[in-house]
Image (cartoon, rainbow, N blue to C red; front, top):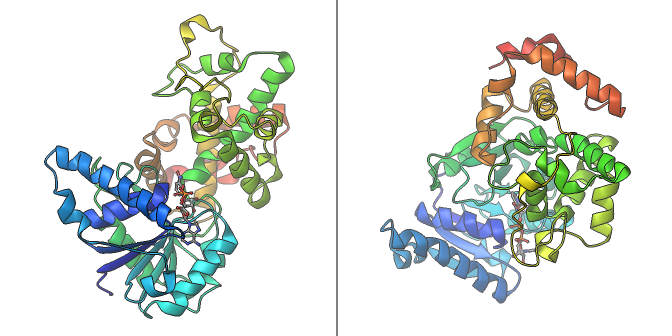
Length: 388
Ligand SMILES: NC(=O)c1ccc[n+]([C@@H]2O[C@H](COP(=O)([O-])OP(=O)(O)OC[C@H]3O[C@@H](n4cnc5c(N)ncnc54)[C@H](O)[C@@H]3O)[C@@H](O)[C@H]2O)c1
């Protein structure tokens, strides 16, 4: 197997700089590539910022770690000695394919090309190269130094050896919250494991939001329905992530999985009106004075949310992931969700009482006229219980 020493990270935005930081900390020679010097400079500042916080805790010496870093604005020459490439540019297939092509034409024959795409087909990116066997997915979670999960994804033509190299590199990258958890994604399907598991909750959320709109119920009352809100209530979180991200994500799944994922009225209106949340200062909440802190003790509940249904939806989708052969067992799905989202997966909690969740899901699917949410065969039969 190739001994990886030189890693090239392409695109040094939010994800690329996190990936470069942990690769430097693992003592690889790292080259970062972007399209403008100002993006490179911003990337360097961000990497240094992350390292300095660790230096302050006595964990490393920033200058030593940074000595492994090179930068480039010319992709073709940057990949000449690469053993391993991680592409982390914008989520656009044509841009990614161009990059895969340039890498293929200029990198040494043994070099593996990995994409950090959250959603797109590795198999399609690989068609831009003459080394489809050496193209894989390497999906990190944000922020990279803190979130333990890396999904290593097999495209249709990825070789077992390339997957093993991807897994070995992923395992070698430090994580500040404990050991990395590597989930092997066996099929190149939309959303891979963790994003796919959670995606159909949006069908239910859109139903709830549109019901609020219809009945004139304030959105914060929907937020008030959640007993345990974690660090951010669901709609504060939606604002934080960005309504545009939800809108585009839902449209992507509408194209690739089922039309039922199409954004509802509320999300579509907010997107069109530019109420994108934190980044525009207004979403479900007003962000003009910083993060909103709704006082839920004073907000009346909408009485619409049933948390069991959210769990049932995720259990059902987890069963689909197993049915489609994307993951080899439910423990991997649960563990991946914890490592990537800091939240419990659905199986450990839902297995015991699964018949009840099948019933509840069947009833809500009927009520809102959803075919996608109907319990799948593996869920209904309970056979998933043995697929640990
Ligand atoms: N943001 C997240 O939470 C997250 C999580 C997992 C995966 N991802 C995926 O990671 C990738 C990057 O996302 P991000 O949030 O870091 O984006 P970003 O917009 O912060 O950064 C993208 C960077 O790529 C650069 N770039 C664009 N075209 C380029 C090219 N042709 N060559 C070199 N550099 C180029 C841009 O200048 C920018 O610096 C996307 O595929 C995204 O889906 C994002």
